[in-house]
Each structure stands twice: as C-alpha cells, then as structure tokens.
Length: 192
Length: 258
Image (cartoon, rainbow over all chains, first blue to last red; front, side):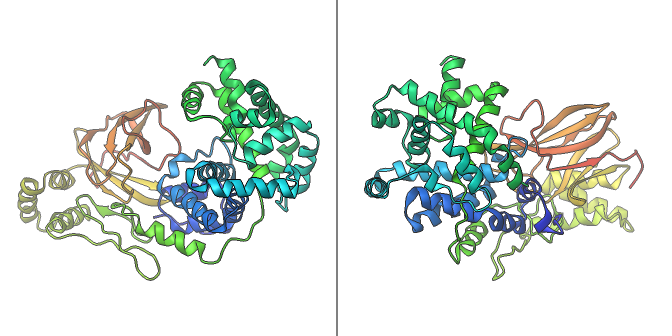
C-alpha cells in the first residue's frame, strides 16, 4: 500500500484518506495532532479522566473503522473529531450511569461560578475565542454554555432558564451565527 | 417539520442539544438541503473552536488505541507492506509485538491463488499444462480459475492505484468481460459496498457493485468506451453518483496482449 512519506507535512484530509486505506501510521499522526483536543474536550464535559480516556479511544477507533464518516469536503478533520467527541461525551453525560457525576458537575459548576469564557483553553485560539464569546449577549452565552458544556438539551435549557423552547433555540442559533465570522480567521489559522 | 422549524433547530442540533426524533427529521432534511448543511457545518466549526483545548493526553492511551485497532477482525485489510493478495486468498490478521499485521493464505485456496499469480506473471512456458491445471481449478474454484483463463489469452490488465501504489487489478478479456483478480482493499461493514465506476467520454457511469468483500467479486463488463476505472465505498445499495473519496483508480490500457 501507498505510504505517505512525510506524515508530519501531510494534510489532515490526506491522512484521513490514508486511514481509509488502512495505514496505521496515518491514524497515529492524526492522534498526535488532535488527541489532546479530543481528550481535553471529553474531560471538560465528563469531569472524569478515565471516562474521557475511553471516549478518546472510541473516537479514534471509530475513525479507523468508519473512515467514510468523515467527508473532507464538508469541513476540517478536527471539527469532525471534536463533534464526535462531544456527541459521545454528551451521551455519557446524559446516561443513567453518570447521573451522579452530572449532579456533582452541576454543583462544582455552581460553586466555581461557571463561565463559558473560563472553558476556553486552546492556546492557539483562546484569545480570539474569548473575544468572540465576550461580545455575545449574556442570554445567548448562557444558552450555548448550558447546551454545549452542560450537556443539556435545548428543552432542558428552556426549563432552566424559564423561557419558551423557541426562545432558547433562537438564542443558541443566533449566538453561534454571531460568533462564526469572529472565529473564522482563527479557524483558518489552525486547520490544515 | 417545515423548513423554517428545522432551520431554528440547527444551532441546537450542532451542539447535540436536540432530541433523537428531531435528529432524524433534521438529518433527513439535511440530505436534501445544501443551505442547511452549510449552516450546520458553520455551527460545528464554531462549536469545535469553543471545545478546543490543549490538554495533555494520558500516557499509554495511544497504545490502547493501537491495540484495539489491531484487534478489529477485518479480513481483507492488507499489511502496510504487502501490495496485493490474489482473489480467493484469505488473509488472517495477526498481531505481532510491533502491532503490524501478517497476511497468510489458507490451505486449499492457496493452490488456485498460486495458479492465478503464476498466470498473471505471464510466464506461460508450459501453457498446455497450465491450461489443464486451471481448467481443473475453474471446476473446483470457479471465479479465480475463470479469471486465470482470461489472463491466458488476449487481455488487458487495469491496475487501480492509490498514491502511486497498486491497490487492485482487473483483467479484461477481448469481449469486455472483466474479472477483479487482486485487491488490497479491506472488507467493509455489511451496510457498505464497494462500487466500480467507469469514465466514458467525460461521463462517470456505474460499472456495478462489488459488495463489502473485495475478495469475492462477480465478473462485470467494461465497454470499449471506458477509459478509466475507479472504486469508491458506498451504502450497500450503491449510489447513482460516486461519493468521495475515490479509493483507487486506473486507466484502461489499449487492447494489446499483456
């Protein structure tokens, strides 16, 4: 089989195609580039390093087994991996098994004065993301924060915020759309 | 749901904050609505930025992943260093200390596999004897033997490559009957199929479905107008248009004896 001679300079898209052709080295390079972000997001969501490790393992094994799920024409590999990670972590967060952990998380969040801005750590993009988040209206920030980092469905957010579901849907969508242009430059700067 | 209702949910959908029944409706809609697909992708990019963090990965995690990957039983998956196995060969994935895989060929099947290799090598110094051997093989082993027979006469060999390396070979007889004789493609889940495509005068046409197992392929036809052959992985029923990425492709050579 073909082997990408210089893995470190290969694009994410070509590495993903190499994974589809069964090159373990390509998977290893993808892991080297993105495992920190995958594990970091899982840990931030689940609050449990062991479960976060399991999620990370699942994400990469799934990429190996079902590489066709990633479509390079639609977006970056990092975005895809983090979306899969978020979905899996949310599943765990919402599961019966983790109810207790979720309650502990809610308590910890409450005690720490949970803030979306404090959740953004990426060293390469943190400043731009913080700026974009800071510009959001407070109600939009809160809705996104509860959904993305809190693992709540928009219906749950509506109950928490005591607002109609339609309002919460709009706030989440509007907030994400507002941040898009702000983050565009940062996205382009970090994707390969 | 109406289009407007689905649009309102796209942000929550990108954050995994919708209900499963809503997800199904949204996903069905996304399949037909490029504008909404683009919006979801934009939301996903923003979410990924929010979720990005530079966290140190636990030591030993890659080793666990590599071990899991090595344990996935996917016959047909090649060793990185092996180029092709003949049709009919049954590769067996075995883990070694280095987590690389070794391909072995099983028992009786190896006999016809070896015959096909010999024929494709075009070393026909004992043609009559080989023909007799292969005719016996056809009776015993069907497709592999038939492919070998085609290879004995006037034929063309299409080499499908990816990144300049051989991935599969197709032997085409004078009448256009084609046999997929070698492949290093891995076996797909049963919900998927490999699909062959031909490029004819600028148009892409489906040449047929291979199925999920690239080691067992029925003969198919390659018309004279086809200049390039490609293979993609598609849902089990196949598709009208190929889905990227093209896993391998090769030009159809001029009709000369290999």
